[in-house]
Amino acid sequence: MSTKNISPWKKVLVVGLCVLATATLVFVCLMAQIYYDKFHKCYYREDIPRPISENILMVYGKKGYVDFVRLQDARTGKYITPKLQHIFVNDFTTDDSLVVFRTFDRLRGYLNVNTGEIIIPAQYNRAWNFSEGIAAVLKDGAISFINADGKQAFDAVFPIYYQDDYNDIAPQFHNGRCVMRSTENKWGLINTSGEWVVEPVYTSIYAPKHGYRIVTDGSKYGLMSESGKIALPLDYDFIRPASDHAGFVLAKDGFAKEVDVNLNVTIPFIYDGLYLLDYVDLYRSRISQENGTSRIVVPKYWRYDVGEGSGVIDNQGNVIIPAKYYMVRIVDDTLFEVEVTGGGDRLLFNNKGQYVGKR
Image (cartoon, rainbow, N blue to C red):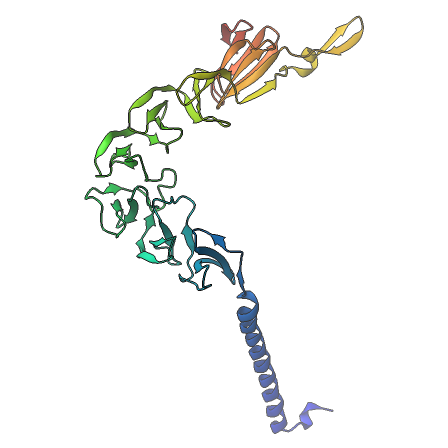
């Protein structure tokens, strides 16, 4: 039937019905999205509670895509705190029961892990857990220290250079000493009155380990006692805690040794890695022709690593070249090539460890 015979009223009705159908479809899609967001996307879940003190549980949950945590009284089952973004309980001690919490607007305050009560409201940009009754906080662009009632412990304040800085060194007290930075971006130790007991002259001071702090001026390392006295001068290429027992690894001039907590040598020669050296020319040097028979020539030397340096050691454990080079190669049984730095000079040494020239 020709559309010319359809009356104008019918045309209006058809158009109206189309508009109504479109609007209905849009409404249904909108309601479906709302329903999805409310009942599917924003689901709620709680994980197994974690005890953090005798009567307090820390409960992890998730609503939608948002993770949260809050504290619960184990005796009553009542939630004590509102939903928080994080509670920093991993490094608190029983002597200092106040720990840092963070709200969803990323401000920090303190709560008591034994009661769940918020003691110091969230107001700091950064905060660290209490140690020996004092805590460091970041507010208004400076580090200060507070006591358990939120009042400033002493007048001294210290600089912070970036909003997200201070991740590497926690400003916490150990035996009355705390690592802190000066306006010249150097590190020293302060006491519980905020006074320098070790002047800020170091590039970095590490957290105490086995009764010592590792210190560095940016190129050399040493050991400092927790009281601030130098136990080993800054003569070492690196110092790190021993991996399997109490003590330290000391590296100097391509050699490393292990000492105990009294700084007595327990292992005079150690290395981080040992690898059989392959010849530079694999085809001509590793294949030997004797009486028409080919055989593989196995090198008699090994590359050993100390930190980021490499050297050469023979099958009897004798050091030919100390491990202080970027890379080492074996040319043949009497000649080695070392690279001083990445892409730097290439030097030649004989199998007595004597320099014989440049490549």
